[in-house]
Amino acid sequence: MKKIQFLFLLFVLGIATGYSQENDQPNQIGDNFSLEGALAIFKEAQSLEEFEKAINDEKSNVNNLDLNNDGEIDYITVLDITDKNTHVIVLSTFVDKNEKQDIATIGIEKTGNEEAQLQIEGDSDLYGENTIVEPFDVNEKVDKNHGPNGFELTATRVVVNVWFWPSVRFLYAPTYVAWVSPFHWGYYPRWWKPWKPFHHTVFFTRCASHRVYFHKTNLRRVTVARAVYAPKRKSTTLIVKNKRGTTVVRKNNRGNTKVVKVKRSGRR
Image (cartoon, rainbow, N blue to C red):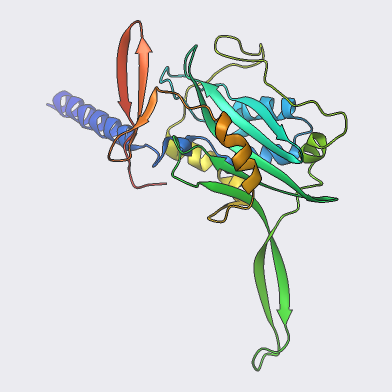
């Protein structure tokens, strides 16, 4: 009798675990790539080659994408599109030999002699429309004419001048040559070893530190970069959106087509 009860308990636990894993899905597929994390790494990178290597490192806790549903993390390539004082850093991945999908773009515009601003935007195929993240700082001001206490401390977010970031100075150096990743489908760096994707709640927790100094905004500051990038955007036919707004990934495997739906769970 106890053996039957034990087996029944294992059966129930198996169903519960399977159900929780099935429903542990991001609101958008793009939520499995941390835009905040990409900016945190970009801020510290000395070059775009170093940046590409870092975002493809499991320990960086930035990438959890498996767009072609092969059970392994996708390799992210980096490309720089330049136009005078504007740079568009395009982050992409190959879904198969002939299909490439852009994930996000970092738009950088020089606004003065030693001034520049940037924002990263998730591609609309993977994220919600106008998903924009930018660095922020806090300006604290003392109001001395406030009530009986005599003063009050107020804090407001301010736009960050990114000119002195090593990565930005690298892009605007006189000897800089626009970076194009040498890697593509079936040809990856020897040091890169893909890993299995984490459940979304695990990944979301692991990249929490990236969200401290970068936040989402509804205000588009880098407008020239968007115009420069628009005609060169890459979007695969293997990723479509149905009428419910759910992202559907179709994978060709030995001539067969597999449809994988990412359900909206209403969770972060």
